[in-house]
Length: 224
Image 1 (cartoon, helix red, strand yellow):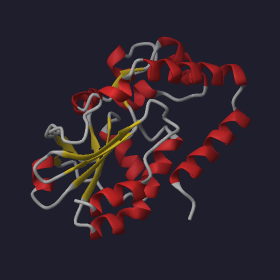
Image 2 (tube, one colour; image 1 turned 120 degrees about the horizontal axis):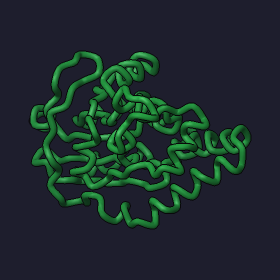
Image 3 (cartoon, one colour; image 1 turned 90 degrees about the horizontal axis):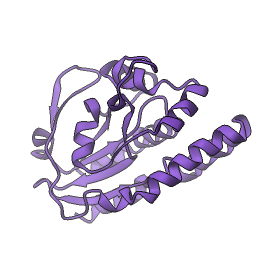
Image 4 (cartoon, one colour; image 1 turned 135 degrees about the horizontal axis):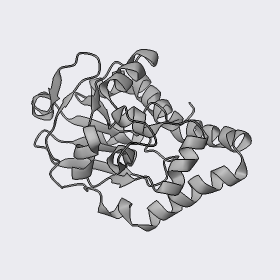
């Protein structure tokens, strides 16, 4: 079976074939600078208590409360950047295909991003995602997990050059009028919460091309 990372590496290879080297250099530099901030070392860790949330679901429009889910079993939280990110979509589709195994462990899965409910709804429908996609406006919850960052100005120009409109996805605003907070994103990250809200698994990467393997998450669930 092809691993998630193998699928992500294939996206990277295709991108390097299609995008000009000088444009890619901007993205590479931004990733290196983000890693150099030490952000990966600051995320909530195993044993920490996770913050609670009450966020809108893309499909139903209803608020989903972490307390309600945790009353039923362990909770896997996947933070993703948005539907504009092919790495995120590939990860979400892998979780879609892995969902039956996760449910057999008694756990629940939610995916959370700062993009609008409309964008999350498009993602859920287009990619047939059977788990809740929740909107974390301004990445407020992600900030409590210590996984947020703001895309630097130079990298914003890169995204604009490849027609990725992050401020519109996050806030419905344009490149030219959006405030900095519309450029705020979470690191791609996965957490397992025990029913008492303590964290049993935590992994996040400054390099958006790297994600935890679902099998590692399932193994951690089986060990609870």
